[in-house]
Image (cartoon, rainbow, N blue to C red; front, side, top):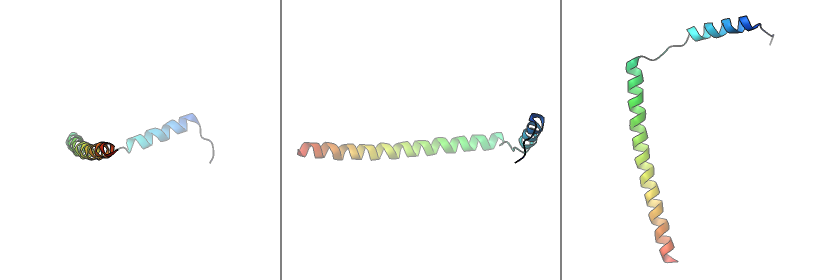
Length: 64
């Protein structure tokens, strides 16, 4: 690949930057709500799994 001048590089970066499509406010809010709900669901799932493993370990330690 041939070297390019800094000015040419900046020009190419600007051209690529103009191609960026930013999400609308509605899309951003909808995605944020989805991420929040999914995070809540996963945290409750892992709380349950952790509690179950903790109960099993406590039970096994009582056997010793």
